[in-house]
Image (cartoon, helix red, strand yellow):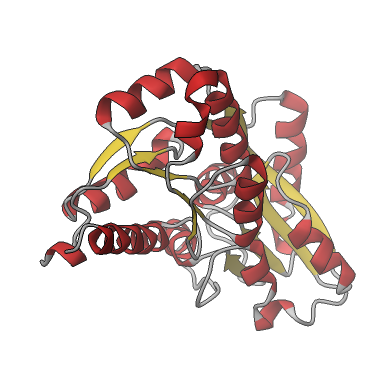
Length: 271
């Protein structure tokens, strides 16, 4: 491995939920980088009894849907919990679709079926471009997701004539940790790259940075990797100065973006 192919010198803040951080952290460390965890969102199963009852009723009628869409790994994991309570196997009448390759692989592992996914990119915009979602007039589509997710996908499918239902299988909550804790991790470990997986996590990061007040300008100047053009725009609006756009939130896309930052660092250092 040459220096330009490694991530040596990068000290990466990983802000993914606790259950999802190790895959990326391991990949970065294997390439010579250092990682530090600070989950910005906490993920858990839906707890409200009324919502759980409504979800289970939808799942019991899963064979009434033409397509099942999983918009994240969490949607697969928490969706599988409730599906396995009611079905020994996924209904064969339903086509299974995932937002990206890593989510598709996890769905295949959980359900043992073929899963369609975009060949490049892992955003709702990439998903809606799939040929299998082009003609969905009068098709019933279930979207497995977290509570209060984006409406873009459902709205686009409804515009194409589909009947769409959300199956909210997990909930997100912002970290209870404070900005001073984050600042300490960044300062003591000389963090020089931030990673973000969603607009929600970016908003939490922004709030914690603003708590730091006199260090704000310094924090907002740290290079940050975002997963989509939408989150890229949000980061720029919030005042982040060095935003790098990855082609999705999965580990492969993030590592590729980290390589680009490492290469830029090499050029600046004359290597």
